[in-house]
Image (cartoon, rainbow, N blue to C red):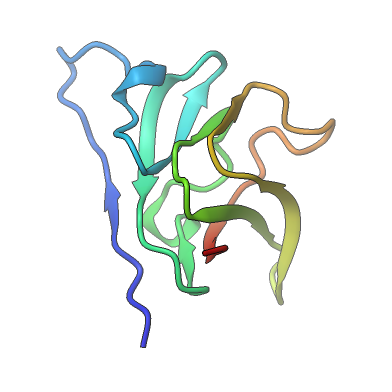
Length: 116
């Protein structure tokens, strides 16, 4: 049975916003703003389970991402009210600001899928 290890992040008000390099090596990270600013979620273990970030109050926020894994694709998902709808799939060691048009601030779930 695969286990999905994730960490929800909350920073004190005095903390500086996250940057690209706040994403640890071999992790997948989501950011609140463009250019890797405002790290708010990270996950490392793949296995196919959906981490429901929306249920933790973290949905509909992602503007940028970094998949620093070498072992997983990251499937970003939107909860429609009845099912998980695919939004985008991000390959290993890929970062960017450019979620496709209409996909900014819609991510409610992440599934890390092992590729090796």
